[in-house]
Length: 389
Ligand SMILES: [Zn+2]
Ligand SMILES: [Zn+2]
Image 1 (tube, helix red, strand yellow):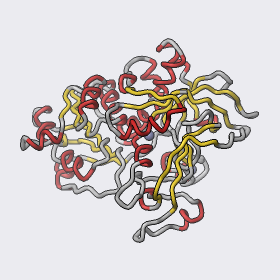
Image 2 (cartoon, helix red, strand yellow):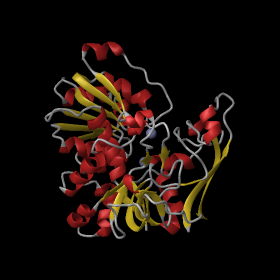
Image 3 (tube, rainbow, N blue to C red):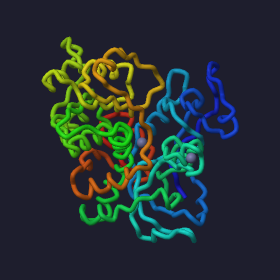
Image 4 (tube, rainbow, N blue to C red):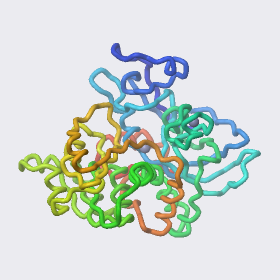
């Protein structure tokens, strides 16, 4: 079968200490310090076998993620830009939905023909963090499309326990195709939900929310903030296309930080002005640029305000902690989307039309043109590029 496969050379940078875990598993913890000269192609890959508790899925819609683009783009030395857990070669694609075509012998609750979306994080359920209720911090984590083969393929096999039916979306949106497109947005939306509501515990209805960076996580954060009763949602984004989409999914005001800087302004001044001087009750980092965004957040936090770090970046961010103390503020780190009712609640919010992120899908490519889909995504002209099957 065909799959969009990335390969790269294992070439740890001179200053990167390869750990025993990395040597043993072949997984790089900081991908951007290990993998060099990536190549991508639509390859012939072996059809995976079907273990008893797994299901075989024909992907119908799969989003191109910023991390996929960061596999493709390299720095001056030829290293990939994605800073997280990776093992190559791998078939990419982790924001997806599709139709179940076959179920393993011990699968109880799913049938061929069911439409599902799937968690990207394959938590083991057996390590100490998993047993203590931290599936997103699993020590034996595999990630679909990062360390094991993903959904930009004619089929993939995953554990039934990572699947979430989207039958309700087909009923509301009037068909499988629309349901699967919305279903492909459940993963990034769940990442935003996990950060804002599971990790940070949300904000009170009427609160002011600032979202820094409106890629797919930022769009989801805006829509979720609206659905949760924010009185004002303020977004910061440099891309004009994404600024317009941010307004469409619910931002009350969208500002270009580069334009602000040219006028001698800054995001924290905007947030303070928009909140009558009170500051943001929640500030969401979805830009992956914390060295620039966190200082702005820290200067415009409401009393009891929360900073939620969701964007990924291998860098340190300066923070004047005195502001955290005087404002009784807090910072939450978040990764992943598993557990705590997150996928279920995101699907419910879509099915009730409290959120609808489908407008952010701006380009579609068939699997046969998946390389072109990645190239398109590097242009950063889209809300979300989809590969459809
Ligand atoms: Zn993603
Ligand atoms: Zn685990």
